[in-house]
Image (cartoon, rainbow, N blue to C red; front, side):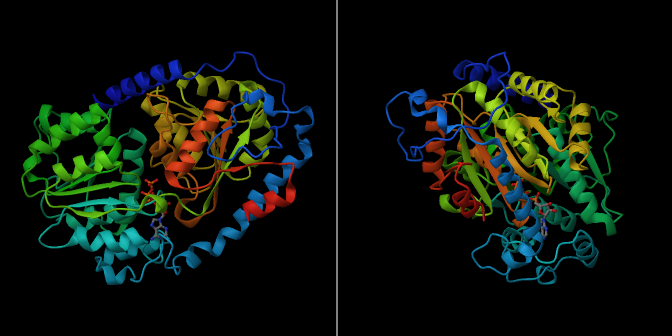
Length: 486
Ligand SMILES: Nc1ncnc2c1ncn2[C@@H]1O[C@H](COP(=O)(O)OP(=O)(O)OP(=O)(O)O)[C@@H](O)[C@H]1O
């Protein structure tokens, strides 16, 4: 089963990374402020002296000043209201479009669905990709667009436009890497297709058992790769030859992760030659893109330049902590800011996420935990509670780094920085993690916890990769911070 495999992949990743990242001490630090540093370490090379030597006692920050962060986040959320409309008129924004939804020739029922969701104009990716996806004869597409700019909405519209409801068989397959994401995509399709009740949707996800051999009639099937493969090959309830549109969401991770790639390729092999292929992601590393171009015949490619990949609307910071114990203290001090809207805190391992969650609760904070070892039902319930705002702070691992769309998330904290199996910066995961905030033009903040020379190097690698500055959050300099956050 794919989800089990995914869990095993995550397990393996977590195991490897635990080896490369020393475990957080079992004792809990006393709560005190994130420390500030006089010297500017935000250059690409950290001074050679020992990290600890950079600190002085007087650098400890006045806790009262933490409230500034609260104030600034609060203000930026309030300011947000008209921002989407402004951005959609700004030619440099990824939300900009010349066309209206009407000009994209959507069916009237879909137009109603789109407007009913509160969309006024298409984003750039929607404006560019939809005509390609709806063209006749069908065209293949590999598309990259920044996180939260409407890719899911774009391919959902394509699938809903594509199916012929009179044909009572599955015509569109959409694969996503996780259970939660498959459910979320399905919800978008259901909402957008609200006025097309004749179009039916099924979820190929773990636990959704089907009768062997009896072909299903749902026009669109969304699921994870293992279950979808079972539905096509083992249970034979989908005739893959009749699929005319195949969507791979988070396509780069589906290609780069071996388990996903094997399963997706096995599904792909069963499709007919002329099945339309649509690949989407916010990140496409060069080698992955080359592989995708090799697999997808004659594709249209929408690709971002590296410097366009990060969103201007997400302000990126790092907090310097003296040592590992201080990260917890710094996080506790940020807690007020986390709960102004909603926040996601990323840890490197399940063990660390569980530890952090337990200790935050012990400190009297209300937080929820989502990590790979939970059952899919538990995970879905946690996401639902978070989405509905019942939980304000979610502690999680990379299992939630991609795709999850909760618009109120204003702050992402990297309690552990994302690193790959070799201990280098995992730039793609970083981008997806911080992309959980700043959805569709909203303002967002990403705060990275830096507790060693090693993690400072990771920050520097990320800065260099995206050519984007990650600024030291220095709560002792109020004026400077106000400027940075405005
Ligand atoms: N044209 C639009 N107008 C207004 N809001 C939109 C529009 N298109 C999408 N949205 C909203 O923007 C948010 C982000 O969209 P979506 O999830 O499709 O982005 P994405 O590019 O798939 O993100 P990710 O890269 O994280 O997977 C959603 O809440 C969605 O409802």
